[in-house]
Length: 264
Image (cartoon, rainbow, N blue to C red):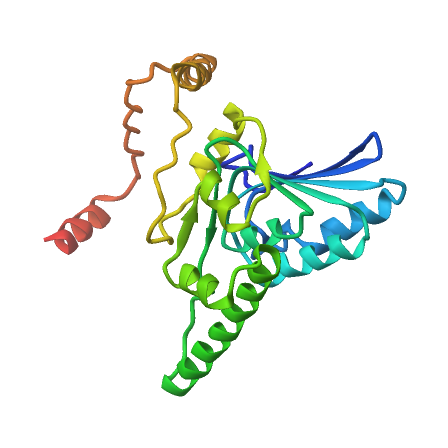
């Protein structure tokens, strides 16, 4: 298991094999970060190479998105393995993660899960000519993404592109009706809800509000964890930190007079 974020230890990438099934957990952003860590095609390739006798692949997704090129590379890598692929969307499959989800022969969605598709975007710096070129590049990337959705769903490219232009969030029933998913599976676990609520969706204009505290049981669990952490530190929750005392600095009367003059 590879933790993806120290502040959010639930986020992870994991590959494990049992009963001839190679299972991947994609529970974070897709693509390498500044430090070279993250969910990448090379991570999948290593797992496939280490488990050649597995006869099928199970891919569980809960991801806010990431790098569409990396997602496409993983999709092609998994499909080229020539083994049946089942995708389960445990929480969300947004942006690049929705591309990856299209690799499945079956795409199953948990209760309350969602798929989001939109156009490619980036952060860019340059002059007007460079911006024009970048806009053209983004349009080509979006068109390639649309082709992947079209191949999976059988929808026309015009309809898919309209959905991408609008940043469309698909519920379970909507995703099945449109062909992005093929069926349903069990409801999301408290862990999956907690991961989903930790994602930052501010970059998306139509994102619904996700909250891990969807029922009393989950809510109590969060409160217990916070209380246990506070007690282990032996610090009252509302006690302010003590103000540090000033450290005296020895100085001569002449130095003190110069300092006072400088302050005035």
